[in-house]
Amino acid sequence: MGDIREITGLKEVEGMDASEGPDARTANTDCRAIPVVDLGPLIRGEKDAIAKIAVPWRDACENLGFLCIINHGIDTRLIEDMETQSRRFHDDLSADQKMQVRVTKDQKGFIPSKATILTHSSYHSHTKLDSVECYVVATDFPDDQKEVVKGTQFYGPTPWPPEKELPGFKDSVTRYMRAIESLGLSLLPVWEAALDLSPGYFKTYFEKPYCYLRIAKYPKVDFVQENEFGLGAHADTGFMTFLPPALEPGLQILDKEKNWFWPSVPKGAILVNIGQFLARWTNDRFRATPHRVLPPKNNDRYSFACFVNTSLDAVAECLPSCKPPDSPPKYEAQSYWSFFEWYMKRTYVHYDDFTDSDSKAAETPKSAS
Ligand SMILES: O=C(O)CCC(=O)C(=O)O
Ligand SMILES: [Fe+2]
Image (cartoon, rainbow, N blue to C red; front, side, top):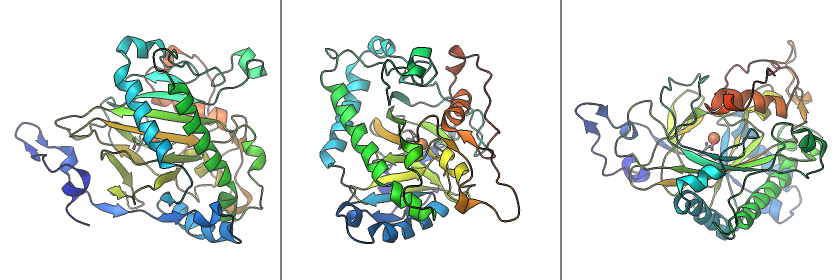
């Protein structure tokens, strides 16, 4: 596998700073391959493709909770274009222009650096604000939809930069999000088979899928202290996440034995992982795996995780194939809306500006990030 510093691109990190201890990126963290699932047979519509793919899928979801897909049908040019659009947003717009599209009560828009801290993390102490900045685009709804008219949270529109400031940006980003959304929906039969559910089980829950895309920039940093993160340890909130690996290293994953490692992913593969909403739906049979991002050393790092979720009003109640035989399920039935609201309130320091909502999650998930 080679030397870790070679793999992570941290060759020139000296490793020690007399006053502050070692750079956190040089810690003795190994690099491991994660399960690879070939979607070729599914894309080609081969007989038995779903059943075949469901086997390694289930295994990865019950164990590491992260896998990567190859032959996924997403054009490389779309991914390259998103990298370009991400740089355009973060680097071509001024701070003022970005603040014109600052995050709304619906959690759409620009979130400046140092706005996130996972105050409820049980994975490690996390005392510094994250250095990541991001622009969030999410599913928009028709103006006359009842929740939009009523101003229900998460139903409001994405604030886009004016077309003249970033020509073509909205089109490109929308195209990418749509492609990932349809990939996610095309995988529902695989999720069903992996969870021993009848074909079409998830269909009604995904009638109006709520997707969001976090277009993130992690500025490069000369020295990283312990417990300093680009993005602190967290598990995603929704159903499934798609993440083309960033060009710069930074992502670390926590295995079941609670060891952090750097994932190694084949060229062109897309990472897939599970969100907490799905994990609680499966009574934790599938794992919502903690992961985190260390700030890059050499160049700014850009990433675009896309979260494909159920409809906001879909209610998840322990799946029939995941019910424990002799005890009640661990979690109450809960809508995605309510889970998402609970999570966001605890994750972003800006959230209190928007809501005095007293809505509560049906219960506190035992290992929320
Ligand atoms: O930047 C990355 O590689 C991961 C981003 C991530 O975990 C997230 O946005 O939830
Ligand atoms: Fe994440």
